[in-house]
Length: 160
Image 1 (cartoon, rainbow, N blue to C red):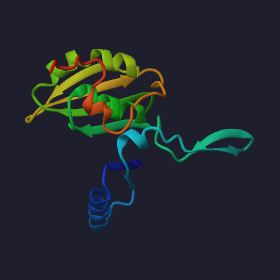
Image 2: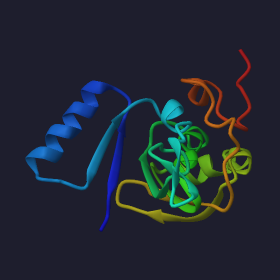
Image 3: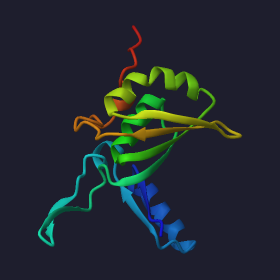
Image 4: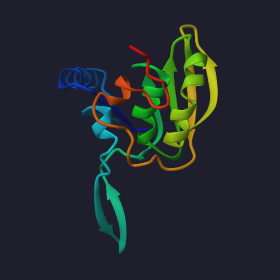
């Protein structure tokens, strides 16, 4: 049984998604209103269950697969998305025609995030970049609100 969690940066967008899910009868969807930079640091609560420690709730390293549409350069998108994937999880990044160029400039970011490029699949309107996450993302990522877009990991800043 598949379950989906949708992340929307604003409450207005989240409410729209809730209404759509309700109208079309989706019961297996949770909608979260938060910025990716904050939600990706939410580890949930540690609880004791049957004598063992477990985590409840949270979003960091929780999902088997993460899908994201292009919200910026690949280095930026990877920083916002990779922390949500479990170790050995996959990230599917929907990108435009410049995905190959962006993948080249994102190599340092992928290294820092502990992600690797698995494949790129062409679509009629762009490309889907598939990443693997073989180990945990360092706790420093993603950086503070807006920082991944202002200064993408591993991408040299343009001179003024």
